[in-house]
Length: 499
Image (cartoon, rainbow, N blue to C red; front, side, top):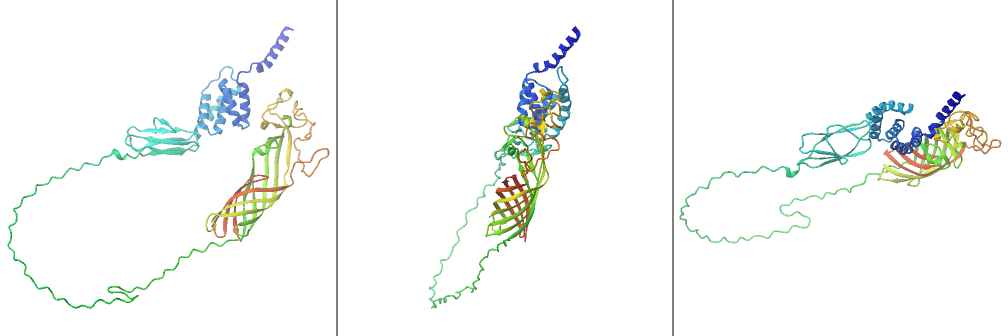
């Protein structure tokens, strides 16, 4: 019996030795890897950086580089990919580490292709040329320099006898930028050529002129005065001597061009969509995601008074949400559900908009308003399904522990998979929330349960609405508007025609 007993002891040692001998930094590495897989890079980066500082593993370094690449820090990502790709399998590396080394080679090439480069080429040789980019001197500026995309670069060039040159640029992904460097010489660097005095001959001396005998002038008697008439003064309004009569010219007074005719009734259509941020879900519970709701509207507006428009509209919105984990605030992790929606709604409402002209003819106008209305979900359903941690091992109840809810899977039924009875059960209000369950409307109260959560008719409120109107032609206008509503942040772009 010694051999079977020794084998059993060895098997137990292998099964329970791994948690006890977990290396330093493995906890942060596992948490960071799970967060990176779920797309939570802001949470994953500090965990993976901490894990790498304690103990390097390719399986944690590659997810760290993946997060750097998603955030645009391509140089950091490329450096890590190349470092991991150059590694060889070492003793103690797991299958995940070997897979990370293999994937790092491909990811390094893909990341290098995304990194933009900058080349600075002087148009002529400059003595003592120094080129700095963001304060760092570049040895050979004609060699392509790599930088992260979206980062502002300040390129400064100096040379002896020339003025300093500076310019700011921002590179995009995969961009190959080349700058032709041309420096202006300083004014003091060039001297005008010296002018030599022209050779002149000394002036020739001429003998003084001889005096000539002249006769004294004869005295003539003064002329007799002649009687003359004094000039007659011209009458008022008549031209004087040497003047030509001119007719006064009357200039017409300038008249302002007529104002553009104001149109009172408009018919318009356009795109409008709602953005529901994840924080809206977190006001009621935990989980959720950012959701974009596309749609469009048709509107009829009429002018009230001089500056107000009364707008009646009918809009369509598609409230489609992919599988999203969610649980009410304060509930345990076992209450997480996978929620989906393919609801479609019609909204009818009225808005009052104040037009503030930005020019004389109201080509541009600032618009400020608010609106109320009602919505009707005429099509689609809301689905809810109980969920369990995806990393759990079926048949092992101890492995069903809280984890990243965005990796949870749908329960197939009560205690299905085996060992999931704490997550997949029939004990709570969501006992029958399994694949195929459709949430009833909030006007329906199933037997023994609270009213449903699916909205059928709901109020609609828009406050405030801010927009800009462009009227390039007399009967055509374009509107850009944003606002806040009970269904999310609104954005719209439309066109209207005067009737």
